[in-house]
Amino acid sequence: MDFALTEEHKMIRQMVRDFAMKEVYPTIKEWDRRQEMNPEILPRMAELGILGINIPVRYGGQGMDYISLALACEELERVDTTLRVIMSVHMGLNSMALFQWGTEEQKQRFLVPQARGEKYAAFCLTEPNAGSDVAALQATARREGDVYILNGEKMWISLATKAHHFLVIAKTDPHADPPHHGMTAFIVTSDMRGVKTGDIHGKLGVRAGSTGWVVMENVEVPLENRLGEEGEGFYIAMSALDNGRYTVAAGATGLIRACLEDSIKYCHERSTFGKPIAKHQLVQQKIAYMQQWYDAAFLLVMRAGWMKNAGLRNTRETSMAKWYATDMSVQAALEAVQIHGAYGFSDEYDVERYLRNSKGAVIYEGTSEIHQLMQAGYALGLREDRPLRCELPAYDPEYWQAEASEIAVGD
Image 1 (cartoon, rainbow, N blue to C red):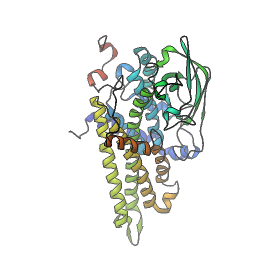
Image 2: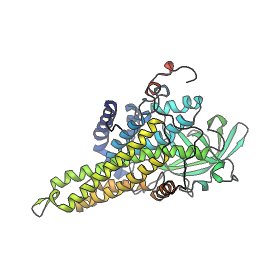
Image 3: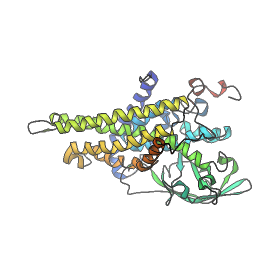
Image 4: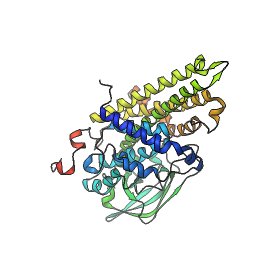
């Protein structure tokens, strides 16, 4: 097994690092205090090409592999979780689902402009009364001829007021047994009549990001906007979560690194009892743990990325990476605040923001408790992955990086 990053990987990592540090970091505290998203962030990420980083060139993307996606997410969350959240919903939960499940016509209509950064995308699964219990969702879609009539409310939707395209999961058969067999996925656009959105304020963390709600009132969605077959919505949502959780895990790894690097810097600047706190053994213990957490999280993410590149089912491995990395990011942030002492309790230093931001990731895209149950199920032989109708394709650089004109008809 080769753990070395390619030159292309190193280039991507450095490009994203430079962007985040030079263009976002200087003003992130201001936007976090204002609880608003900097309107320049999405256009600049689009210009860099990272909003389609691992979408094939023929569909408007950069044609990079899944490891590149993880490295980008790590560098973005090293500066602020807001940036990685954009990648999670636009790329992981929406665009990669379109690439995996969409028809050629849907890819041309929706995926191409998303990969180019001309349109922004979001994922609508969670509702006011349905989170971990996906089967409890109440949004409905009733077919009438060549359209579906959608009604329902989605909550805690990242980019709700910024997105042009929404991937919505709704019930087409409320009486299905089991309930998840009655769910279907749809591509809904923000300009459809009956679609309303709004922002949520007063969040503990990710304050410089956009989080909101989406309400659908008798929205007419054309049949051609249905993603997959009727009744496949649950499987589409779960496959999307495999991709979204991968980006969350990679981002949480970056947050651990941020806590570690900031703490190391402070350890050499701050002195107590006549010597730098870097020489106090209990402080060293905290640094050692953070280094351990980062290394382990990084390796778990790289394993999941390698499996994605190979076209292997990775639900178990991605779940483990997400669970471990996000839990340890909270612990790393707590230790970073402790190392900074009273200064860590104010927003003069970034570790205060890291702690607030870290808490969200142990809740969304599968709570830590859900992932514990998943891992226990796998270990005890009580859970197994069933093949999906459409698996995420293995990374093939010749295909991913080829222009549409270079692809033979039928490929």
